[in-house]
Length: 71
Image (cartoon, rainbow, N blue to C red; front, side, top):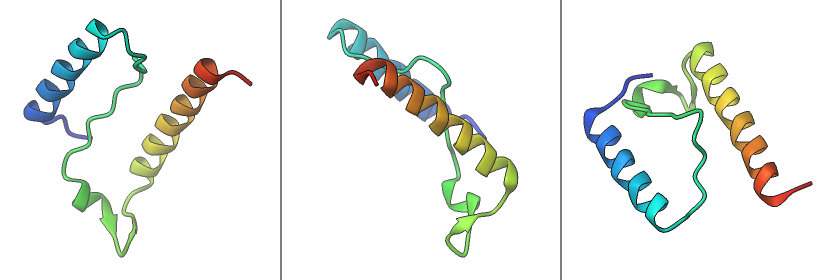
């Protein structure tokens, strides 16, 4: 995955605002996805590496939601 300087800066600015407002934010893992159009081919993920990355990210997100909401 590529990091975009613009996306990184926007994400950082939003996080600062969320901290000030005491909002809940998943700290890790972070995902910056650039060139999303290149990641898909015929409506499917073009690489196993991307599929694995996104699956791991979504698993972490599910765990984080479980901590917030509870079982």
